[in-house]
Image (cartoon, rainbow, N blue to C red; front, side, top):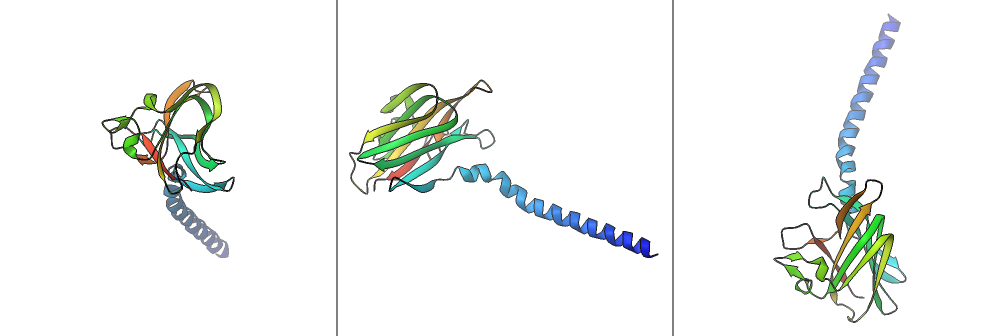
Length: 184
């Protein structure tokens, strides 16, 4: 009789433990699935004594299910220059960058940016990082609108995608985004 009680008690503990594990997973899994979306958020960090803006570089966007975080864009000021660095675990094959003091200062048609008309652009032969160095012509407190676009290539999958630095949506119908950076 004692063996039967002991087995029933063990079974009850096992069932309760399983139910607790299921409850914990039910609470944690939805949060864990949101981690890539949370990683897209802006993060401010210090670099060379100035505030830097770090934004995820998102490829294949427009649909949260298809977007891929392939790297980041870092914006900072140092020694009289504005720097914008693209970094990716894929390959950069093209970068397009535009910096303006208003959203309307970025080349657009019907609210959709036109990367080919951006002030800074470069073709690359499968590089992991590229940095633009722009003379700092803006005074402290100036708000800059930065559109950072790239074409990235994944050599393992032989796959090419367009990518944007994560940020605010342009008013047009595509998934293009821009960042806001304040000159300090």
